[in-house]
Image 1 (cartoon, rainbow, N blue to C red):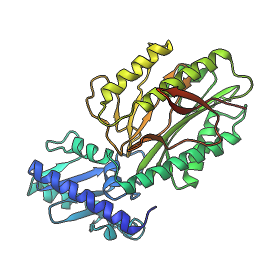
Image 2: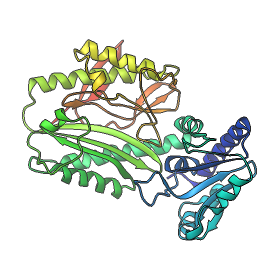
Image 3: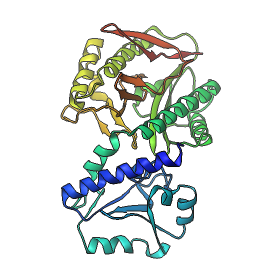
Image 4: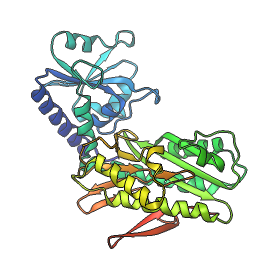
Length: 368
């Protein structure tokens, strides 16, 4: 992870954003408890004990004068020594584990406290999501590293995949390789043979691979998530499967090229719908979501026909166009030079797609 100065600068810049939001909403404090928001404000601190929970043992309460990290005596020593919260500028408020929450309850009793609880009367959840979706330079450094890790995990696991191995075994390999690199596999989908066409989200089963397998990985590293999908076929590729894969590679290239600042997610959805129609698969737009922005969640916002949220510079996206049996997915970053693919795997075979004179390389099905 980047040095302490960069993390502190990032955290302090975000505290300034929260205080501006506080003033605009006439709030006395803002409370963040959701795991992605805690990771965002602490510049990637690892705080979750139960990775399946939406909140952990740390809450952040920010006022115009204070930035409090509220936890218990169980967690405080590690949060200070290994996550550097005090060095980032947070004041540790340590409560007994059996009375945790009294400090926050007292603050709520004496002032207007906005929170990241979407159901709360004074929710600031949409504002926080907007802030965390546009990445600061130090966050982009972390995201790039997360993407390199995700690509390397897939490279390692694919090298060991062979007919006869079960989907669950492959999922375990993805989990283990992610952990070995300091990341967490928050999504692992593995589908083989007929299951790829039958289910858009094939949770791994005890089925053994015969000829064809899809590996999907969302890897989280210090708060930020990288998403990618790769397909492997054993033996000659059937013509119809290759035709579908090439068509979806072209749809994916059009979506990536269409990722431009100022365009809305609704416009991106319509671009995908046109691309599917042009490819001869008009029904595909209805059969699965097409992806959207990515950051501290596997998807921050999905592209839908009614979402007028504009795409912005320094935002990351993961589009995932698919037809039955084929999918294409990488994590990209919208930069001043246009969209850049961050999860590319240099040794992976690709198909070249040229659009308006620009060439895109999209992952092909690896034949083994």
